[in-house]
Length: 537
Image 1 (cartoon, rainbow, N blue to C red):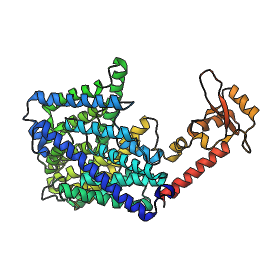
Image 2: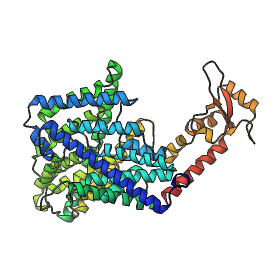
Image 3: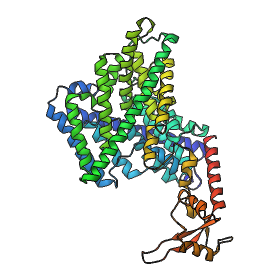
Image 4: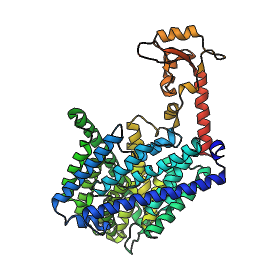
């Protein structure tokens, strides 16, 4: 019944609950697997203090582990993906916008495994990106099973993402808002209830396993000298916005450089992650804090236990390590690194600010908290959910004013220098321009064959005129989209263009029908209307 007619509202809520449980278990399993592997490979019983323990290990072990991990990742991606690239949050956003809430399933599972290996063997990224995509894979299976339409598929995707984020970070409010703000990119009322249900399910599972504890513990005193100190947090927000842009552009620059080297030297694809592991191992010998998600260093920054010079050096080294890891196609997320970089930036800024005007300053660690939220929000392009996730990760709701000021200005600065966020800029570099709004990408979702008038149909285009245009080289292929077809109307100045199908190489194109401009415009208008109805329902 569900597969033929779709779920009712109550049925959909139960599906959202079940999906939330599955996605939450997947997120818990992913995190547990990383911790078990890290404990085994590095020989420590407390992975929360991995950086401190790694500093005592022989240098050759810190060098060889990332190389082995990179080799494993390279072979895995080379064997099971056509482009040797790990899927992450950007692909989930693309799936929500362009693929009716679906993501690649097989490649998604392979990407999760590759990211798990990367994070366990010294890669310098985060776990939230792989977890979000892994949860989206399960949502795709459910959508396919119940034959969900676009709206239902996107809502299921949001449910899975919310549950995964909530289970990973013990952050139910931020998990739900992350799904709405980052993945679905709207706050429709109809999507909120099932996403909230899934988010709560993920949080409950996470708390049953990890306990009801915050990820970071702040000092007892975290006072804000209120209005007098707010200008300093405004300056911190501007600085964090620039640091976020440096991080994003460093990743893109490193990726372009790695692509150029690979194109020039043409090594086997599996060598790229392995070489990356070698570079990361060399860095880890001197700076073991780059290993993994970096929560030990982030906690140290929030506690104020790092000196100014160390904080500045760690920022620079972490930015380089993250860029190298991602350019090497090793996988992982950007959120945890941005938290670490933001906390270190805030601590360094706060150390200077409180030293300049100690009589007007509160605790310097508050700047680390605000910086952590500001850089992460600017990178993710998600000021609302990032602000909330910072509060839920730390349990500190009393310093919201400082965090909000820094987050808002950092987001404003970064959004002017990149295409709104790291993920949307990633997609834009691949030719998927979601940041510009539906008018820029919606045409790419409508196939010509769904709009055209077939040959012989009522009000079809004259065959003789179509064949003349084909002879002149004016036509569109049947598998094209309106994004490719619409510019032709400006060129030929005719109300229609022929649609053809190609057979074997020695055969002429077969006339299949014609695309009329008026039909194309009607299809676009209907799609925009459906989108507006979905986002405001």
